[in-house]
Length: 60
Image (cartoon, rainbow, N blue to C red):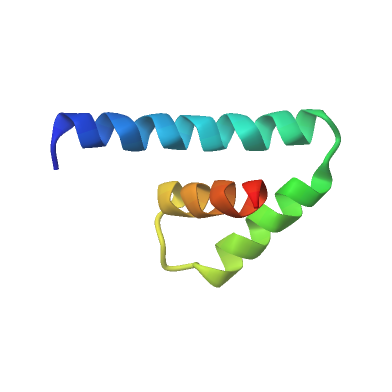
């Protein structure tokens, strides 16, 4: 994996984390509920991959 790809992944994870944190600060617990649902469906995936999946699902 190239350093550019690692950087892109790192940025996507940071954005996903920030999106979840902002939603929770705004009192939107449905964002956390969706995130936990994704964690349940993909329980063998890494934390970072679950964050990426959840962020994509939250946008749609």
